[in-house]
Amino acid sequence: MWFNLSVILILSIIITAFAVANSAPVIVNLIFWQSQQMSLSIVILVSVLIGFSFAGILALYQKIKDSLKIRNLESRIRKLSDLPLE
Image 1 (cartoon, rainbow, N blue to C red):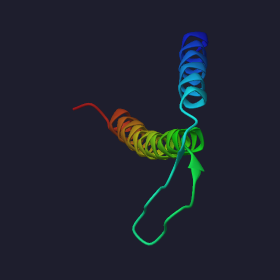
Image 2 (cartoon, rainbow, N blue to C red):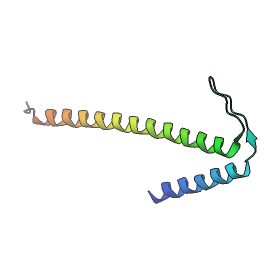
Image 3 (cartoon, rainbow, N blue to C red):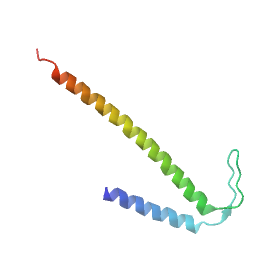
Image 4 (cartoon, rainbow, N blue to C red):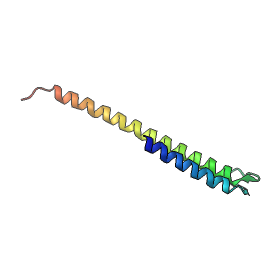
């Protein structure tokens, strides 16, 4: 766990340093929205946060799915262990 936190902290520092070093104003064009002059560092940080959020949601979905599968398999094991031996 400490290793994971250390890696996340190091990556956060690197991303923040990269974002601060790139602070030039840019125009962001999305499908139905266009920003005026916006700092590139804000665009980078928001993009990283959105990416982490999507990754977290997908990881949570996978964890719930695996948990349900494990619960189902444990239930099947209990049912099979309760059967009399022939």
